[in-house]
Image (cartoon, rainbow, N blue to C red; front, side, top):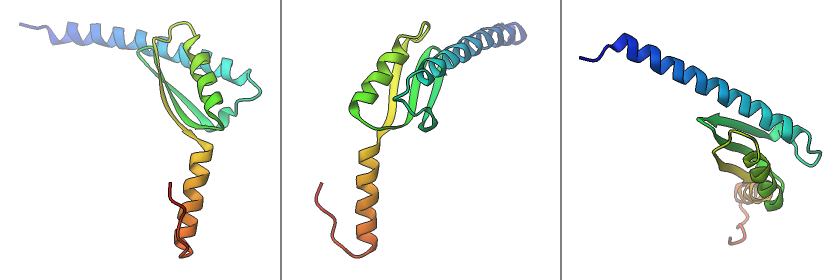
Length: 110
């Protein structure tokens, strides 16, 4: 028979340790990114789950995307970097297309 109390305490201790490590990694990532003048951190979010960093937000170029991934991967404790970033030019093009459609103008083919 499984002792649920012991298992729960063990799981909670492990999760607490992971959460603390993830929070330390997240803070290190933000500190590193904020030191880069070419990066607007107000448009970025970094999530860390079990050492995996997830980047969410908007970047200005593919070069900036690559730089972000490389910087985050260099932080001690990061085991993987997941890119959920949007490119600003893609967002502007989509907004323009929607605006044209709203005004009854045909949009340019993609």
